[in-house]
Amino acid sequence: MAFYASRRKLRPKEHDETGGELNIIPYLDIMMNLIMFMLLSITGFAMLGIINVSAPSYGGPPATQTNPNDKPPLTLTVAISDKPGAAGGFILAATGAVLPGVNPTGPTIPKKGNDFDYAALTAKMKEIKAAFPNETKLIISADPTVEYSVLVHTMDATRETSDHQKLFFDVTLAQM
Image 1 (cartoon, helix red, strand yellow):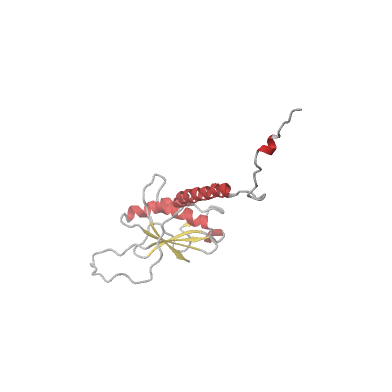
Image 2 (spheres, helix red, strand yellow; image 1 turned 30 degrees about the vertical axis):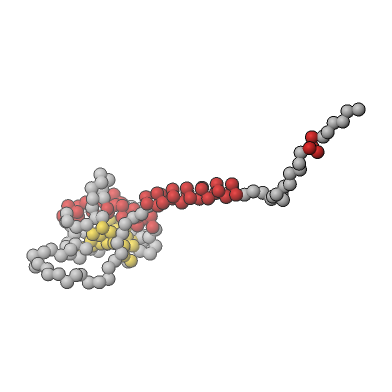
């Protein structure tokens, strides 16, 4: 009679060290790599959405000697009014000079229905820039009810033309 030894009995029995727990270390390694990749890729997208504006300064002008022949600064202001009817639109004003074609009693550029006329604003800014070529500063103020997108479109319309001609790119935001 032949005797066959079982192979199971010849191999030593392996003990399960994990005790039935799941090994999540490889999963955590993958997740950490993904998180670092996402954080690094988001910083590139954040740079595209930045709009440079200046905070208003509260101090007086610097004490420098002024020449009486020097022209005062233009201090151009664009106010955004979101009131319905004839009162809504862009109101342009300047303290250092008289602007050509500006209506002192109402909005300079009224709204077209419910929309703001950004093309007319850009054309008016181009006209003012032709009269004052050395000016770069602009103050934009808005009603509290004006949406943020209207403010951004106004900044875009006053900074440069569609053919990338620089207008008033040094923007300061103010409250109306």
